[in-house]
Amino acid sequence: MTALRSISIAGTGNVAFHLGKALVAAGWKIGKVYGRNRSKGLILARTFNATYVDTIRELDDDLILLCVKDDAIPLLASEIDPGKFVAHTSGSMALSSLDPIRNKGVLYPLQTFTIDRDTAFSKVPVLIESNSEEHLKLLAVLAGSISEKVVSATSEDRKTVHLSAVYVNNFVNHLALKAKELMDKKGLDWELLQPLLSETILKLEDIGPLQAQTGPARRNDQKTITSHLDQISGRHKEIYEVLTRSIQETYGQS
Amino acid sequence: MTALRSISIAGTGNVAFHLGKALVAAGWKIGKVYGRNRSKGLILARTFNATYVDTIRELDDDLILLCVKDDAIPLLASEIDPGKFVAHTSGSMALSSLDPIRNKGVLYPLQTFTIDRDTAFSKVPVLIESNSEEHLKLLAVLAGSISEKVVSATSEDRKTVHLSAVYVNNFVNHLALKAKELMDKKGLDWELLQPLLSETILKLEDIGPLQAQTGPARRNDQKTITSHLDQISGRHKEIYEVLTRSIQETYGQS
Image (cartoon, rainbow over all chains, first blue to last red; front, side):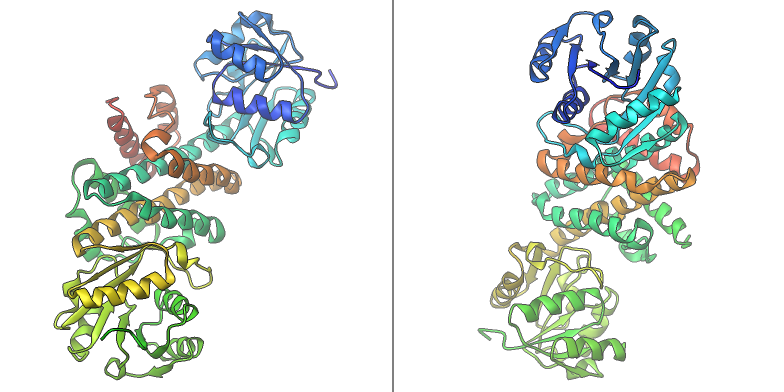
């Protein structure tokens, strides 16, 4: 195979929707769409000008892209003709999770997708992997058509990227929630914090998080730390304490 | 006093610099600048077209703004003529930290300032407080001339805002550092994570952090959590565990 003529998509979630939309916008043909959720699958197929099919075995395009939950990947891979070219889109699953597929790949877009939020896919890094040089090239062309940032990464490296993504996405979001809880409890408008949050990100991306760190833990201001701890309890306190200790350690202050 | 004719600034750090600059840009006259660091004080005074003075007692404008470290506030306040109108700019210090000043106030800009990063002050929320209605009005006019978002807040409320700010600024920055450490260790470019981090913030500001939460802890995906924990140790692991438990509790999954 020297070029992909068409692509099948399995899955009907946010990744299937946003990745499929980006591929169509880049001029790729989506031939068939499969998903357990028939009504979502039909909508997706219509959106992509593709055909909805009821079983995974009916997918027969040059590449079958699995945009499904991690657990479903080995199950679906075992049902597909092993002679097909199959790639998954997961951050944490190894390439080998597609065994017994012979020509396998990964195309992992490093972004959080939401159905009703538009994503500028060109800025989304895409990590690719394959067991065959030839198929890696096909994935590189595919990924390069939708993103400016395509990186070849092993399954091991991708695992690290996925873990790091949990910090900057899941954990950062949760800290914002904990801050919102504190504000809500006092009837304070949590939107007051948003300019600070935005500037925090711009600043750390500009000068790097090691340099950007400020605050009571950074300057070892025990008085302020104690006053903060007096205001919180339970899990809140535990989070405050472990992050404070970690900052103090980072800057050699404990 | 029905209007402020001129303002004195004590302090030569980032807040003094950015707040003073914003005030000058809004048309206010900075009369005198005091700072322990004489060379910085001279630069600041020149920037503001003001006069540098060697002692705090020489500040004699209609408002003396203390842009200094928390600990220095009570000390400086005790040296100023108690008949002067004095305000500090700290998030965590109570109004009473200015005793024995009779007309006292707070003007707290809720932002992280860096000397060489420009700050769009108009978007920075400013929290104000005073023990006198008349002086609160003066601070409201002053703050309103540099920011679109001026909020009257008690010392207690300001303490909560300051604590919440530690979460969205100090702690978020540190999580970015921990993610960068994981990437660095594998020789992976940490800038790969930046589009995700930016989208994380946009998304949580758009739909709120409670709705925006995703990830293994949110969906109680123990397999991925275990695989992540296998990759880390020490403080890294402790941070991962406490935030994961906290997310699970939030969504009733523990």
